[in-house]
Image (cartoon, rainbow over the protein chains, first blue to last red):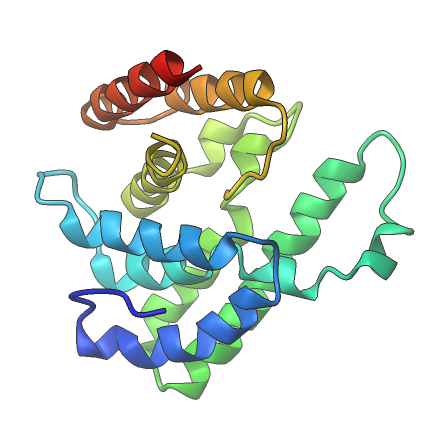
Length: 155
Length: 42
């Protein structure tokens, strides 16, 4: 699955992320691709750093690949959805860090990518003042791109 | 996010909430246009 007009510097990341995304939920790979395309096409004035946002767009849902049906036997109770979301964010952050380290990505940007993936679904959690968590321009920008990609793919 | 929902009403409610939660008005306008198309499809 190729992403049209993807700058070469991100190709190595996509090549490593895609096979893992394919092991996750159905559609996670397509959603990642569509989110990247949306970010690449953005021409407006909202401040953001593509070197952070593009890897986040590629890998924000990658943690689902580690959640196996066997795990769900232990993710139970009234907070099971919240717990599953937390697990996928943390697992995803770890996978993303490994991939970025393996391709020699900039350390400072890697840290920010990991930071955003760790909180990327906080707006889905209940009883959390989630807006306070999205406390940087990149976090806010990615939050909106992720949501827009989800809305647009269903148009 | 990449939600997989079988129930269309639930999905539309969720997308509506996502639209309300956007940080930037610029994106909200784009999302509103998308939601309009989705509602018409229903």
